[in-house]
Image (cartoon, rainbow, N blue to C red):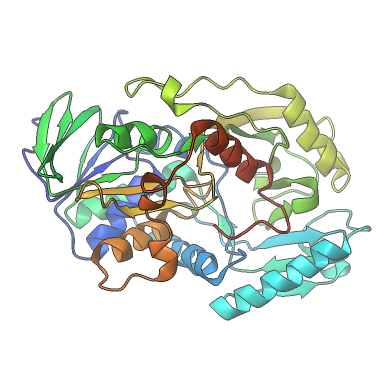
Length: 411
């Protein structure tokens, strides 16, 4: 089948972010949208490797509301009788051992309440009834009943199904090779199957977002950082209805997957890839499971859940989510190339934040007065400022390494 000759908006990237953008655009009445994906189907690269947790507890009202919008979207998609995101609203717990972390939970509770998100501080006995953990040393637990988890590939399929019904077109197996700029404005996208004339391009290319931006002449510090988790065989006390959990002082998170455990975490010594060393047409570097890192996650969590120690692993999930030096998304239109917009730098919120990021982009593009928060996510903050790759890469890694830091600013 021939590639469409034109489309008002072309979205480059069929992962969770690109699909969330397409869905938000269609909901806003922009249905002349074409999504281009290099793989033979949507959601097959970084999205497919996501752990699937969706947490709404964040350190700013704007970020809480963004996550709340994503949850509302997953609920809506789950009501579709044909294709669902496999959304499970099981809630989540976040535990604190130190006085500093207890104060952090209290601050987070205030922010959540300001955003309209229901949360509650639980005592140890209440939390242990929710999850079979040994919480003897825990001082406080924050409970969010509307958090949950989904299957990332099912989320991608649900987005595609609903977008198609609203008129969005999809072309998989299509490699973007260039963009055409005339008089400072986007005119077309070049692919290995021909050109597509368009008024706007949205770069949602994930690990390759840097490369697509370079096609438009933009240099953006969007850094792929390795992330890993693993699944185990069935363990005593686990079942799919258990809440998700986050243990910031152990830098681990997880949930039940079937009757087994899914356990991931944030490394103190992050491993990043320099996007300049990866070609536009090349896949991201192969990740080999890091036995030392995974064993560290296991040892930490086993203090709370002894059956995790030595549990046979059935799968290791690993991917390259992208991070930015300031921990903020890159969302909005470039002032240097009109019609070229970004939806990238997810900082590990790609799947869980996909619908919210899509809504932020719609606000950035079409609102007469975007909020200060949205304006602060513009790609211009990098293209119109001095920075260097060595510092930017180190800073992006630091965002990853301090993901659970009590004093980390909101992204």
